[in-house]
Image 1 (cartoon, rainbow over the protein chains, first blue to last red):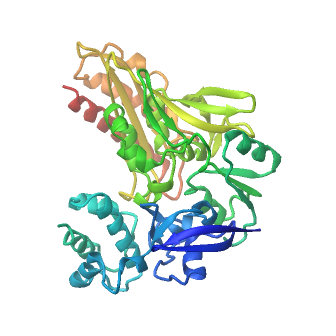
Image 2: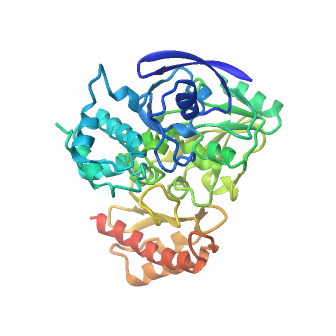
Image 3: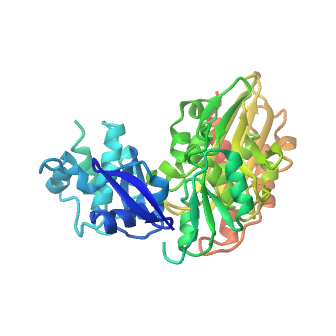
Length: 152
Length: 292
């Protein structure tokens, strides 16, 4: 049975019909074509699916679209504004804070969610903020440095 | 979600939620969903209907300090608990416990009510709630009732909730006459995104002349339910700080004797018992070092 929901994604309002069982991860990737958000585990453990929902970082694989009706979502695609990359994205590039890149959208969203609430986090706070973003490639050091470099 | 076919509702009142719960067989309540959605994906739960508590009014998401207690709405998220000034000032062990769960992403939506009602033996909030004497307010079919934390948990994944009942509020008493010291230690393999191998909450209530008035010890992950130990007051009452080695050893022995861990893929029972021993010492030392 389909319900119509409203989602504001990266500033744009979408009205979509969804089945109750669909997660916002599926809706973002399949219905809205925003494939920057990745599915790593599907069970809320890896963080590759991290998006910002009403100001909070969440695992989009665990949020039912019907439960997010009326919410505002920012995905990694929303970090680039008017063709200009977000400072976090530039810093990740500068520091080489990714290899395969699969965890990277999730890392960026966790980083952004952190800095939005806490503009001057300590290293510990950064590591705690990305504790839910697993990376098989980098060993996290450059991710932490890239986020630190954005602190003004 | 593959293999799942269910209806979804977002009632505005608890009465409405209850009537849907009773009307639809196999209906389940959903709060944050961080446990439930995972179970549904693994087809360990197949509800015919999900009833979201998100839009209930008045909202079930709040932390309110009163003269004699702190009231926490069941839908308060774990991140909110962890960041709350009220909780950090009056019962910091609960914010430690909340922040030990999962990851920032999980805590953004996971709720204290969900952690309690999911009733995993290794859940991180119950041990601290038990030693602080928390009571749970439940909306039954003919009004509200209050159950002590100690009577709430019945087995792995099982609570005293009857069909149609909803946990609405957690009430944690405040003691302004004495000093209440409480700590929660979660022992796990990973520092985040992991389940406790052993959880321990220890509470000491200290009088002005530096003696223990009462205490509480609760263990997680080493029994079918979170375990509030009996016999703690007898060991600790009237003991002067710093506690003697004899007193500490007695408490550690009680903890090890009371724990009933099992072997599972995370750890052996023998390891868990060794950790109960070590962590009880650690919890005692941590509190007595903090009390001036």
